[in-house]
Amino acid sequence: MSRIVRIHEYGDASVLKIEDVAVPAPAADEVQIAVKAIGINRAEVMFRSHAYLQEAEFPSRLGYEAAGTVATVGADVTGFAEGEAVSVIPPLDIARWGTYGEVANVPARLVVKHPAALSFEEAAAVWMQYVTAWGALVEQAKLGEGDFVIVTAASSSVGLAAFQIARMVGATVIATTRTSAKRQALLDAGAHHVVATEEEDLVAKVMKITDGAGARVVIDPVGGPSFEPLAASMARGGILLQYGALSGEPTPFPLFSVLGKSLTLKGYLYSEIVSDDDALDLAKAFIVAGLESGALKPRIARTFPLDAIQDAHRFLESNDQIGKVVVTV
View 1 (cartoon, rainbow, N blue to C red):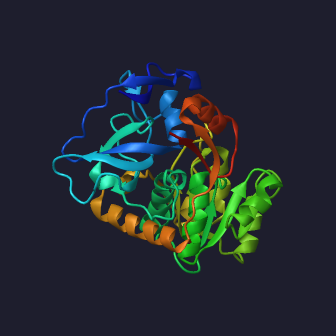
View 2: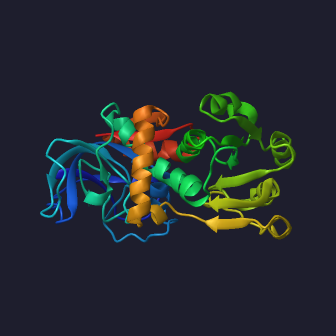
View 3: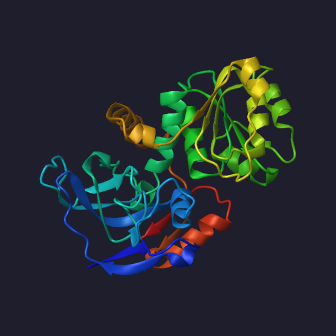
């Protein structure tokens, strides 16, 4: 029996229960991991509270990210040996391959031997953020030298990952945040410019930074009323990647900006990369190279023990922290 986090109903963090569960052997194409650390994501909070794309079948596991050691492998799996340190690229099913607990079975194609210099806590904070940011910025927007990119929700783990990836390809980062309280922290984290949207005019500031051209790329998980000023801040022929809906308010369609600047607005999910073997291989190579060189460095906001999994979720929900929340096992 292993200690596994499950939910038996939707609700607040109190529905997360640690239970003794018999975890089956891995399927033929899976790797079983002895989990050492778990990355906590807003997607799991949304799944737990019935606000996610996937429905639960109770009792349900959950969790997208983990790092640990190989416990055993399925009959068709090669290339992994017992005891090797590995981390997990988020699978396509948050429940079937849930990572919250002492043991997790995950598809072998999503298991990575991360650089040895990473701690388990750091390795558990890698793949959701960097795959999401790489897919939007590099694979889809073709971000490169000389580009300007606006990164909203900049203090999130994906926001920080976007800073680092943009810098790797030679782009200039314009980070947005509500107030100037985090300005220096975001600059220290890699943003070239920071706009406090409750204190400054986003469009005017971006146009000043870009000498009137606007930003060619925007990556945004918020939506809502900020959508129109973001579009107005973009360059002709620019692309906006929308990968979330954190606002909860209606998102107006910026018709005149879209028409006048020939903009592309695209809904984007990390699963577009995870479900495409060729794109996934490119993402792995880029991210591992960045981790090895130090250009990519996951930032951890706070760690909790597994027994405090409810507290970890509450902290993520109630704090606008800079970096990733991690649970150690």
